[in-house]
Image (cartoon, rainbow over all chains, first blue to last red):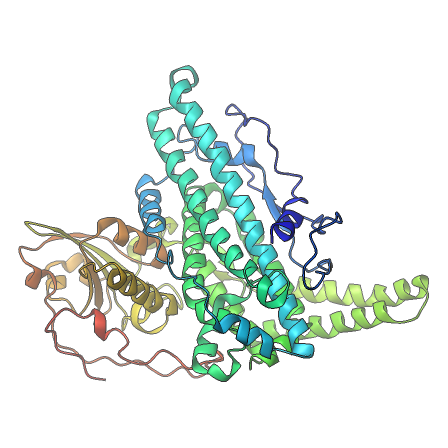
Amino acid sequence: MMAAEMALVKPISKFSTSTPNPRAPYSKVFRISMSATSQPSTGKRPSKKAAKTAIKETLLTPRFYTTDFDEMETLFNTEINKNLNQTEFEALLQEFKTDYNQTHFVRNKEFKEAADKIQGPLRQIFVEFLERSCTAEFSGFLLYKELGRRLKIYMDMTNWESDLMGISIDTAENQSSVAEIFSLMSRDEARHAGFLNKGLSDFNLALDLGFLTKARKHLKENPEYQLYPIFKYFENWCQDENRHGDFFSALMKAQPQFLNDWKAKLWARFFCLSVYVTMYLNDCQRTDFYEGIGLNTKEFDMHVIIETNRTTARIFPAVLDVENPEFKRKLDRMVEINQQLIAVGESDDIPVVKNLKKIPLIAGLASEILAAYLMPPVESGSVDFAEFEPQLVY
Amino acid sequence: MELGAFELGFYYYVAARARQWQVLFCGGQRKIMLDEEEHFKELLFERLRYYGERSKEQDFWLVIEPKFLDKFPNITKRLRRPAVALVSTNGPWITFMKLRLDRVLSESYEAVSLEEALASNPTDIEFEKPENWVAPYPKYEFGWWEPFLPPGSVKPKV
């Protein structure tokens, strides 16, 4: 198990161990990027019952997240950022400290018994699903842990350097709340990743749960598709992830300059579209998995997209009109083109011919994505920022 | 002015002599709390489970069409009726719930007793069935909120 975890840790080269710079200039851009170097290490590992194959990396598979830690440190300085809502962060901290699921993720003998029953092609499909998700959960754990650690260091520095640097005690308190929340979120992610990794004894592999958002209710209603007991834990898992989303909403509300202009609207739509398209194309390549648990892939994905869009509309200044039937038609056309691209890639043609065949397909895919992006958006955002709020009827 | 397709809520604060009461209100057929937002139902049941595991006394309730709402004419003219209130003695939790639901109004109110804080007017509840339900599972059952109604309250009829 440790070998599997270390294989995941190794690619995170962007997590610097250098001392944070509390005097770093304030930057208006907050970036989260994804490392594309997440192949497991090739070093020798202790032998297990079955050798674990390397996770296949493609354009759409999960990678490790990282961010600009120096910028994050300055975002939570109240001397620079006057909009930090201490009350909201304290309320969030209390909610995370409550730790609703402290005793929830406990395995039992059902797990091994269920795993043994999953055989044939579905077993491999299921294993790949679990593997992808564990990567995502473990990645979240690493990112939040590092953010919590870095912000804690900065907060400690402000305690003894406050006079020298002109930073108020409020700053330290705020950073303390934010740092602790990041640490508590890393606790959640570690718990999820650890729970999945314990499935190694069942499948001789590592696990993932990225798509968990909506499937758990369907599986409760249709127990015949409950292939593996992990699905029974989805609802509580979802609540953990929902709380993480609440925290990021609070972070964004604390940075209204990123939400209140035309550029923010364009970025919000771009972000939503990139997430929805990636998910839809990915899942349509994995229909066997979804059908194996009794779901219609496209219907399920559209439900997830619609629900996600409604949630993001509470904070993003503009969102996509995903309930417009034309949006789904565009996604379906993207799936068709993507399938053609895959077929060309798997053909026996020489590379030059393959590339020539791909050009019109890539152009077609790009035009569909652009057309979806240019569809009239839905104006949205938190009512805390709405200029017309006094006239709203609730 | 209405905010497009979004149903909005109303956030409330109640102070009693011995305790401080905080309330979240929702108007417009109470859709944001009772009908449309699955996570709200799940969050309440998660909290109820947590309280049960730790033998904590329940300190949050849903009050349908609360009586003291009429004391605020400036609020009621901006709030579609009937309304539902989420009432709790835990201030930070209500602040968290306000962050979660977003589309809410805030106001303060003093109540001298638990009964006054949780008082309600009898009302019937109606929700339209969605024309196009795309989820791979049925909607939550009507009346899921009954465990959260105040002790002794009359269950609203469909």
